[in-house]
Length: 53
Image 1: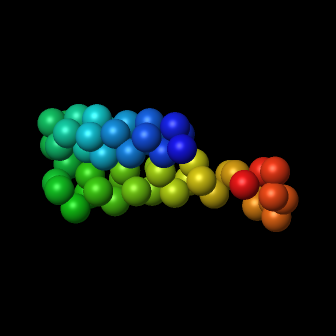
Image 2 (image 1 turned 180 degrees about the vertical axis):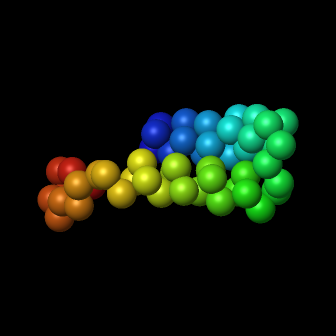
Image 3 (image 1 turned 180 degrees about the horizontal axis):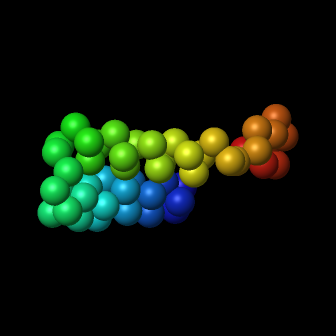
């Protein structure tokens, strides 16, 4: 739960305004943030284990 509370502000509240300041458009900033957010989750293992969940 705490990871989700840290990821969303990092990618969408912190990174997106910085990307806009760097000259990227609104669509590009959303796509870049979503890409990095998805990449982070793509490396997590999928374990069907009750203790893991």
